[in-house]
Image (cartoon, rainbow over all chains, first blue to last red; front, side, top):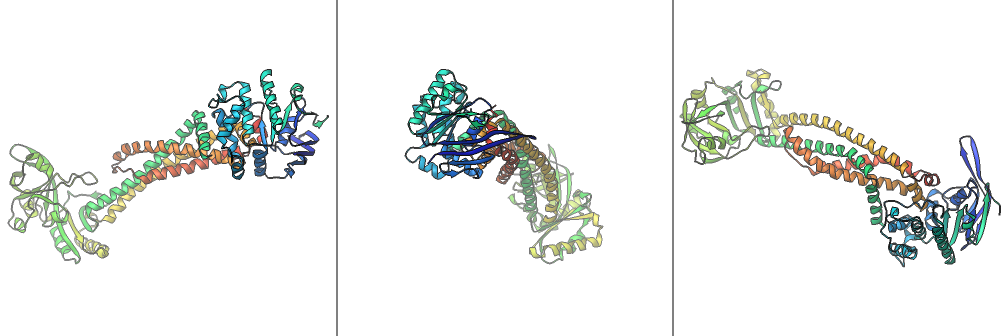
Length: 229
Length: 396
């Protein structure tokens, strides 16, 4: 069974009287453990697609099955729960909380996991220990108590990746993860994604950069709200 | 997890220093005024109780003067005839009477302005003056018109510092009196009269040798045996006095009257302070609310991020309410400290005894918490309802 299944997903934004159809019927299937990239120019609807995939936004029509569950009509609370359990977000602008240390930023999502799930997922390793391990693996072992402003772009994004991994979600959703990084840091970050993929994670990277997209196993091209390839 | 939540909250308050500071400032004065008002009310009821305690809860005091013009203990509107008639009432004891005259007393070398009382037989007993040295008055002091005086510590210490005053001679007017007794220190009355600066002499002697009164007196006092009959006896007394006096010539002071008068004062005080503190807290609440409205927009991306990481709307709402609660508790802490200072400075000015009631701090803290949670609820609700996607796009 596919992990993610989208069927004729449409998204219409209303701006005053004007209706803009951003997604015009997307069909997409992502298998468990796949590494795909979604490529398209700005305004193609790829970010909207990513937010819908991440249960952060709702499509206007269509069907979305995540791990076999129809998520379309789920109440808000349930969607939050799904995000905490299934999805790790990585953003272009990092979104690290400025007053928390690297370590605390990574620990932030733990509190949003439902209690039972938290017990289950951290039964063999408490969150703190796991965060330290993740950060060490990502080369930030020396920077645990730094504030985000004291980090380079690459380090910030690696912190954000650790944050996305702390709850052990199945899916890593990255929106232009290299958009604010130099080429060396970009290569590093993509290397991490490849590793995650080889460790069994499902990785979805959204980008406008074909070079970045090429790192993935499968490339989905999107233009004007439609998948073209 | 709780520790992490607290750290997260606390650090965000520290990070938004300016916001926290203004929010604190906004509600601080509200806290202080609530502390002050509760302390003032507590203090005045304490004052009332002290007055009643000094007066004796079972006592009835009749003084010259009227409610309208106030008690005039210097007037001598009452007479010995009144005393004789009141004496016939059943169920009373410790009936006594007196006249008061502020005047100069002297010995050979110095003189002192004090208050001289010409008193009836039971006076010292009835008012709980305890003899410390020497003796009180006896029947023969009255019968034989003995020129004897019982004095307070302030008088004794003025004329004969460090010596036993018993047996000494003082001049009241031009008449020499022998001091037969010294009464134990009584301190001040709650409204500031010095009870230790007094000289007592038998009424007949006062009438004969100090000032002719023609049987007129200023004060009558007695106590009631059975409190159930208290109101009835007070009414009977009033009827007796009305036979010979106009209603505005005398005033019957009972603990109830005292309490009524003092609680009227404290109610007025509470009313004005109440308006002030409510206004202060409402303004503080508005400030807090506005600050949080600005804050949720500034931190919109943070809300979006937390939502993306799995936070529910309720999580976001709670978070802002926790922030408000933390600010409110911090303000309460500082406000209570300032409140203690305010009590120290303000209550003496209002002649209210100093009290630091725990009640005041508890009420101020809870009231402030309530106002803060209410004020922040609306912006918090707004912040929680942000669409995560558009919130995320507003990275500051």
